[in-house]
Length: 104
Ligand SMILES: [Zn+2]
Image (tube, rainbow, N blue to C red; front, side):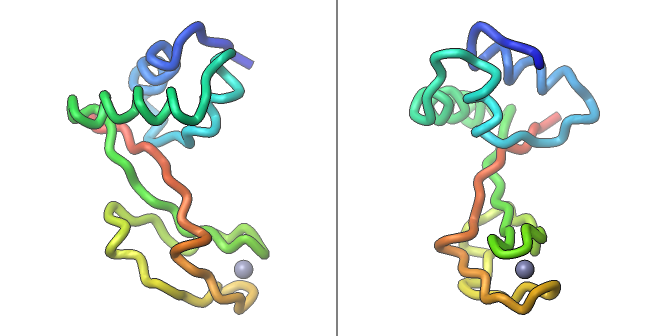
């Protein structure tokens, strides 16, 4: 597993890796020693303001891990949708996971 010294180093590496379209902020926790959710959020916000990253939302069923959809705006996510695999109610409030999409 690659280790990076800073959050910026990790994100810049992702931006250079052309097959990488987006990443989970939680991945940074394992790749950058000393990083915290707060510091990751702050650095990502900086990249967003520079139009290098965009926040997107993945809706995943927590019962069977099926991905129901990916949305660019939180308001576009249905408040409740039904998982087509297991029939479970999937709620936006509980099941939205933030990812960062790389803008190229
Ligand atoms: Zn399901």
